[in-house]
Image (cartoon, rainbow, N blue to C red):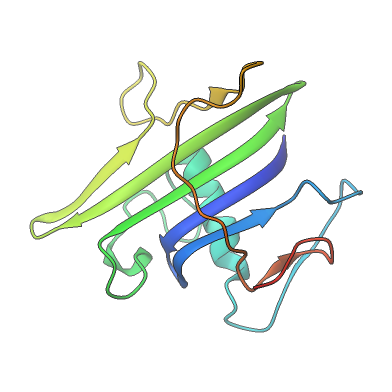
Length: 144
């Protein structure tokens, strides 16, 4: 599995819409770098949550702390390559007065995100952001 793009909206410390573009990386090995508190772990949490619905750091049951302060909706879209095909996984949460309502592209197994394969005509419809977060995936990822 090779990540291609990660789009984050109001997830943790990333308020607003942000994108990490991994396509310019020439190597199979890269580092996510940045100062303490810049969101490096949050980038990994977002990628893991989009794919699996949980993260080792945050667990299965996300709470209000995963939302950027003052925001009521968050989403993560990860585009990746595996086995010669490209896929997209999307997850979103909405804060309601009564709690948090999950939303994900679902497969027949309830509660699981279903990555969508890219066809020759492009991606199925999905929302996304456009700016890059502070942490970078090597020097080839653009900054803010």
